[in-house]
Image (cartoon, rainbow over all chains, first blue to last red; front, side):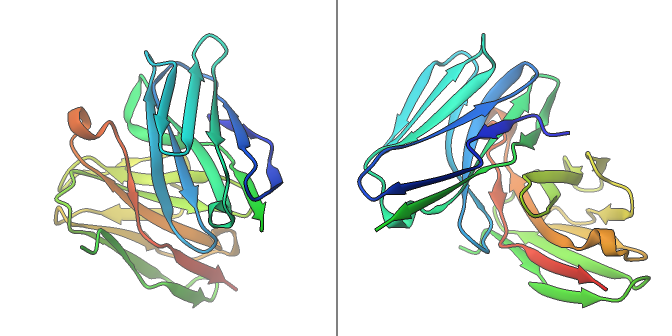
Length: 112
Length: 115
């Protein structure tokens, strides 16, 4: 079963705008990761946030984690057409440290 | 720097045929994984391996078998393909847990159609 559920399923914005994607999960986690998938390609790791962290930045990416609400958000600032892709959250649960459980993804379209 | 390489990239099978998907990684990673991705869904774990000679079942293992005879290779087999196994298959690998925290590196995928 899917550990993470992402919201929205699809998001369309104009270049230069910010994009926010949300992820909710069900069980206690060790860390939460975000991956990006361009059409027809494999997934690429973007950022990891540990369960004891609340916010993390990497370039134009900002991830927040609220373990009390079992949710995370990914913010992409000043989006570009090249950011068009599917974005997935994935959790590493405390009981299954060697496995990632993926959400269903958000399809982001950035219009030029 | 190849990373994770999957072969073949595309395959069409008839129901009942068998095939093997090959995954090779050149990063000396201990952990390797096979996932399937269906339209509109995230990845679901089929089988995984925590080291050479070991394998374990994931979320959706039925109809698949795996082998990890060499550390760098992880094979996924379909003994008798069914239309429900039409999907895109991804292989991934991950390094030492203490260092990598299970950050996974993915291949480009194998698109399989079973008619």
